Image (cartoon, rainbow, N blue to C red; front, side):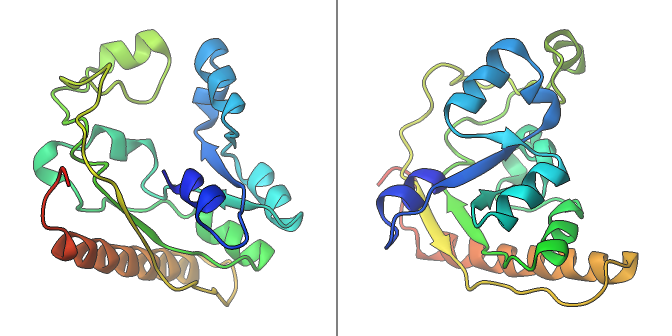
Length: 185
C-alpha cells in the first residue's frame, strides 16, 4: 500500500523499493515474486546502494516478527532493529515514518507454527483464517515528518535513534487510530 501510494499519489510520483528479508529473497518462488514487485534484498549494502543512487526504500524496523504478532497486540510496535539507523547515518537519508492503519486487521493471526516456518524456510509462518482472501479493511496511511539523524554510529547513539523513531511512529499510529471511525470504511 505504501509503495502504491508513493507511485500513484505522490507529487511527483516516486518508486519505492520494499526491503525484503534476505531469507525470503533466497526462496525460488517467493523470492522471484518479491523481485517482480520491486522488492530488494534487505541486507544493509543493498539498501545503502539504493539510497546513494537517490532511490527511496521502505523498511519495517520491527522485522518479520511483526507478521507473527497476536491480534490482541495489533498496532503495538515491538522492538526495532538497528539496521535502518545505521543505513540512515551512513547515507544521510531521512527517515519518513509511515503509519499503516488497517493492515493489522486484514488477516488476524491464529498461529505461527515454528515447524511450518522451518519447513518452508521462512522466519515466520503466520496462519490466518483469511489466508487466500484478506478481510476487506480500509487502509489509511499517515506520513510523518522526515527525521534526519545525526551523530556517530556508536551503539548508544544508534539505540537512542531507533527508540526515538519507534516513539514517533507509535504516536503516529495512535493518532491514525483515533481518527479512524470504522475498520471497514
